[in-house]
Amino acid sequence: MAHLILKMIGYKSLSIQLKARKLTMNKKNSIYIATSLDGFIADKNGGIAWLDSIAIPENEDMGYLAFMEDIDALVMGRVTFETVLGFDVVWPYTKPVFVLSNTLKEIPESHQGKAYLVKGTLPVILEQIHQKGYKRLYIDGGTTIQSFLKKDLIDEMIITTFPILLGGGTSLFADLPKAMDFELVESKVYFDHLLQHHFRRKREN
Image 1 (cartoon, rainbow, N blue to C red):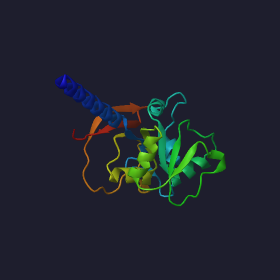
Image 2 (image 1 turned 60 degrees about the vertical axis):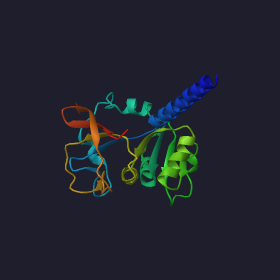
Image 3 (image 1 turned 45 degrees about the horizontal axis):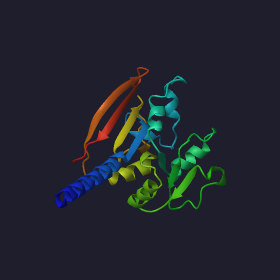
Image 4 (image 1 turned 90 degrees about the horizontal axis):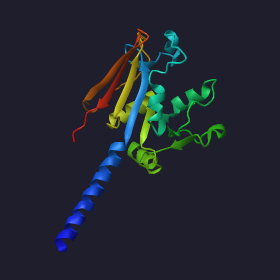
């Protein structure tokens, strides 16, 4: 009987470990973004009008909708949040948006319940978001993406490259404390002009 109990305890412990591993594997921080050939996500004036340089059919989303269906929530910086607020469109997100800012005092009343202000270190912020049940996150905004990369917290990148050299502006990438290996999952060409790469972070088991 004792042997059986110990065996059952072992099974239970293994089950708990597997469940914990599954929960950990379910956590994912992803990027879906467009860049110029020279790696900028905005021009020298912070503009993104160059994204209209290629005519994209209305019924073609280049995988964006499928990507959004696979995420639970978005995490973006104040600048990106305020940029989206400035668009003359209906709020484009149906998933919760968490805004990283140490200067923003509160979310505008018009977007309360849609966006939430978060502060602190990235591990603390992620723990708070995960505890709310949001584990597959879309990370958006140049500074925010760079902050996540510096902490090695990006698991997936879908990057669409436009055939234009901006010559300067807001870079997608910045200096990192160490090299990071990614594997190429897939590459696609859209409209004979746009090249989209899907990368996944290679991590040791």
